Length: 233
Ligand code: G3D
Ligand code: MG
Image (cartoon, rainbow, N blue to C red):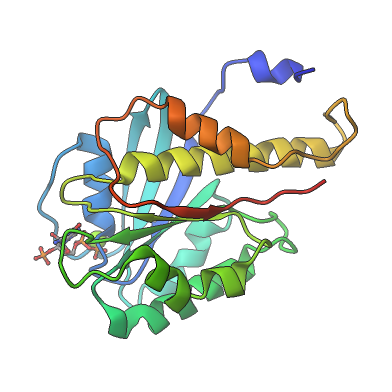
């Protein structure tokens, strides 16, 4: 039996904070998502904010500057958001450790035990058009995604090219699925809505797959992608 609210149209936008090291391609991603075209960027001092719709869902995305002196600001954007988009430059093997440390810092403050509970993370492995780009397996390994996040976090790694937009739709579909899952989980654990079978929640894996399969996308991903969604029973 489905919950009553499953049939109520979703109100309001999904709020996402987009962070990552400087020059990883955050602003290029932002404008690709908003205008579906490549736009020239200049280094972001402060932040950019854009609103747009993807497959009927409204998003407000904050793109926060990634230079090291701006990184202390990240937390104020990630604290109360629905989802975190973490962009990495897949060609910069020598900066992966730095990216990993920054990602871990943010995750620690948004983990399951934090006040706001766990916030889903979409890792965009950008610049896959370049021959020197590390592949998905290598990036998962160097960022320690399985080791550090395991099944404690909802996360998804998506290889993309922000210049062409390849992989972005798939990544945002996964973000949508993870945010939906977190909202359902919050409702079910708050005691207002409990699934009729008494379980706290079902794994989001199947719904994520279904979402991906049914989405009408114009930009296709070439590589397979890995993800981990929180499941509780
Ligand atoms: P940032 O906002 O994370 O700092 P930007 O990064 O969006 O400003 O992008 C930094 C540089 O990376 C830009 O090049 C941009 O064109 C480039 N870039 C972004 N995404 C991709 C991609 O998918 N593939 C390739 N090849 N380049 C990308 P410039 O030359 O303007 O510094
Ligand atoms: Mg920028």
